[in-house]
Image (cartoon, rainbow, N blue to C red; front, side, top):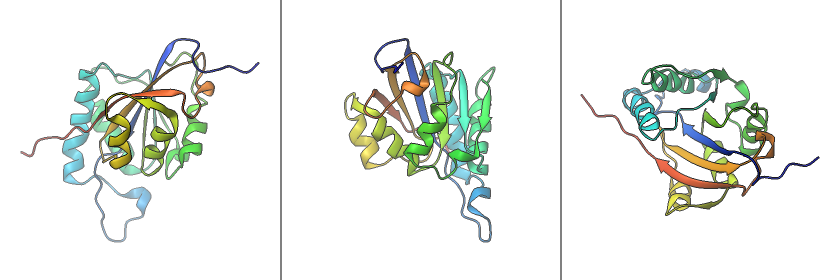
Length: 180
């Protein structure tokens, strides 16, 4: 039986690009850590997600050090963080690879947080968004900066039903921490 998007509970996919990373010499890309700005912005993203009532039921996070550290700093802003799954397939993945991982999410998850990298995340958001509120689509097309998160909503009985053009891009937020 083929399930079609549009039927079922409201689901939210929150797509978070890792915080600003450093570019140290002789460090493999997967092992790069956060820059000072990233260490300020990631907690701001955690607060912004909480303020917007976007606390997820499950987190899927790239295994790259900068993504894992982003998650640690985001989660530190919440009382009880949700379960997280670190998945190497999210590192350097394109939109098809990212969507394949999302399709594996259990049906009971209504809000999913996906933490990864560009250009894959930006391309995923644009592929899934059949429409957007206000100027959200144009903002993502222009730039999806570090620590930004986009919220896609759709109706479906299972995550495997999420398909291109099936979601509504409801918001794009770019949290920034304050310098001390």
